[in-house]
Image (cartoon, rainbow, N blue to C red; front, side, top):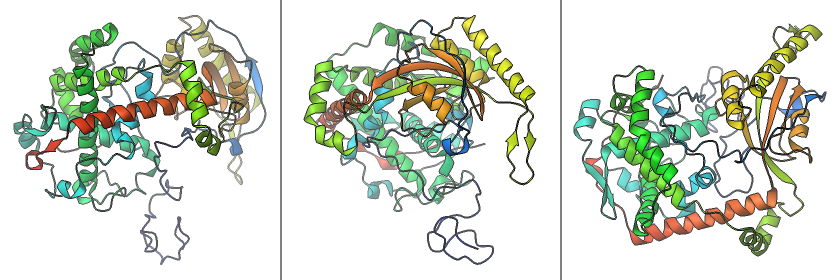
Length: 491
């Protein structure tokens, strides 16, 4: 018996490798190590379309390629409103439904591209230090104690106090984001969702428990957002009318959603999602800081600024193979319709489908395609249908969207060829066949790679400068004795 990760010889029945300390019991863990999150890497992480190129046939059949009116907004821009609670989000970690409360104001493109920048400030010496986090063996208390301590201030920046209830929101969001980002590696990372995080050492920092790791991250995140928000207030920044309107409508939206979700009040829904004692008022404050900060740093570099930035940093871009001739980077949405039935080869376990089964699959895809064309025929309506009807588990929770696709992306050839067709324009649609089924396609956005990366790094540096300016101006003070966290509950 050998270790699945390091090939070391193991005695029969061993569940943990003594050489690399990797767990052997989870059959789903296939990679040698969890994928590292490298915020400053030029290589954009590609989500797999549930159709790896090496497993797909090259056969391609383009059924339709119709042009529709170009949409005005790029793929990142979906709505002008803040959906108070995203109704469904199903990470592979099977985390309890509280994690789905993430407002998404998609018109703030900079936030979508640079959220990690705000969270980490690119290596700035973040407070608090690990030894401060050790002040308690565990910060988790009963729900009753968490409610009683909800209003106690645990940190302060520029005269603004962080209460336990607000910290609870940031803490749970850190847990959510980490579990979602590492959904395929939960077991390998040593996270047991059935045990308290305070009892489990962190894979990211062996000096911390997972509870301490997420708490440290929550405090740092609040600190960075509060610095940005303080700068905005100091400059008397006024949120846009659309953002202010959405924030004003948030309480009513929450109450309505609470009824749909089976809760008596909006406060009950927030408490269920974020922890005992959290209320709609807390969530309002969280959203205001989050979105106003994002809008405040949402700048649009001019074409000349991007050109100058790319030229000034040519050596860096050359290292990553990014030049003016690197081609486009595109976003698409798709709805996958898989054939039904099939015959399985007993030896190879390969499933093949009859001509009739493929025809039935195409007929179903065309029906969905026509449903979209006969409706509003917009990107938003396409995204809604993708969420409802696509069979691609890698994208059917985000409207069928795949971003950052290039000629080198590891997608099946027919799918990739459609995406990278030089004649493709925003708003183009069509149906493409692969071994996985028929893909109803929507071409959402295209941009030269050099321009995309120049914009990303320009905004990264701008955001980093803002964060550093705020941190230099306003230090954070933390009272660890007052911190309490309500219990986490997972399905």
